[in-house]
Image 1: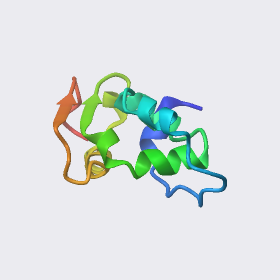
Image 2: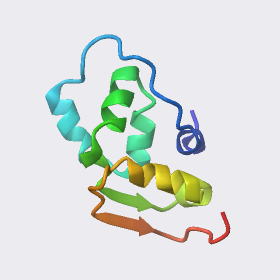
Image 3: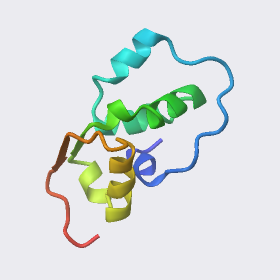
Length: 99
């Protein structure tokens, strides 16, 4: 699974089968960066649902390599929308202008 695929793939998570992730695991998610969150959300349905629907995980967005090479304006808008108005910090490191 390539990292670039996680940036470009914004499909809706399938229905969650099973239970929610353990609370300790959800707490650990808060220590992950943008790139890692995008990768972990592809592991299973329950993580996908949890990560995409927890706006607090998306308060601080750091877009650098290799994300910066694939992030379009549309993707950036979708990522910032995940914070649901709680965005505190957005860092764009060496992002190309024309995307």
